[in-house]
Image (cartoon, rainbow, N blue to C red; front, side, top):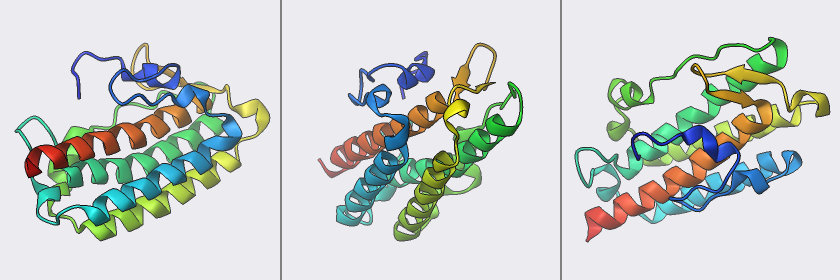
Length: 179
């Protein structure tokens, strides 16, 4: 990922890299759209060479499997955060060290089909979390790090962007290692 980028902007505007514009997705459509995008992840990984999914095109770029594991893990982390925002006033969510998770959880050693199955389950659960958000809760706020403010709506859009953007990253990774 591009260093120095304010990734929180993805909740408000089109991503200059992947082209996703989650800000155009309505509250009611977020869960369905997320599940649709996860289904596309399943198709990508099912069609990929089983060896290629584990290869990093360079030391600073994840493999397709590492991107898939990251997306799988983003979903429950962010669903829990949405639940916190619903019940706490202006919580400070903190930083999830996703770079450490790649190493600590040995993402590149995991079984792709099981990763996609879990991603699908987590996407369904995330959609159910969004279905529980009442009309007046979508603008409830939280802070991830100083200056990084999210509403429930913004966090859901951020997650949708993560799913789309990292599938784009995984597709590019696969193309680079297959070239």
